[in-house]
Image (cartoon, rainbow, N blue to C red):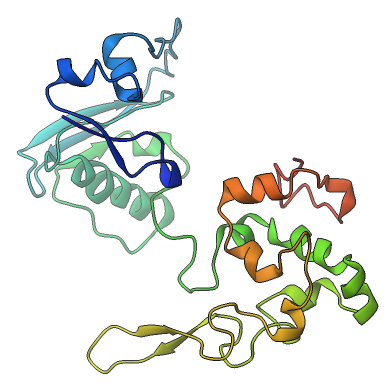
Length: 262
């Protein structure tokens, strides 16, 4: 057993413990060991949902590693499908169930994996598939723009005395429109090089060096950071950096940015 940690993301990356489970349990620095030894535990819910009494029934699933499998999925409950790698979890849920639901409920052009039938689909009115797809298909996409957090950040930079003196509006700090963005890369920070018969290659912009903005926009600093520095922050770093900023300090839009009140 190898325990990597001690935390997640920037707080991890180290081998905290390794060996037999009994040996790992003795390592106090290991969070995993604390759960193995019983020092910490996740309490089981005292009450579970009973469901609505209806269910989806997948019959004769036989795509990839599935061997003529019949599965009953109760509705009105939170269901988890678990198993070892290669056992057919993704095939059953994504390739068969999700594709069939999208095809029948939304008339999507999806082809489901091999199976005989799925009973109970008429009990549903829609299917929402949430997966690990990236939030956008272009380098412009980032969590700040996707969640709407970047709007009050740009408005905050526009209130900096130097920005007000120069007459900069929040649009000056957008990399999607002309004004503050680097025009050489159109605010991407990188240049796409199309390769014949090969995937496209992206290289850093030689003008802004990946910062996305022109010199005038980068001259504006808030607490020693320019707008490009903000985009390079992790969520934890941004949370600490903006801890004294309240929603009423900017044009807060709660319908597009729930959770901005720090």
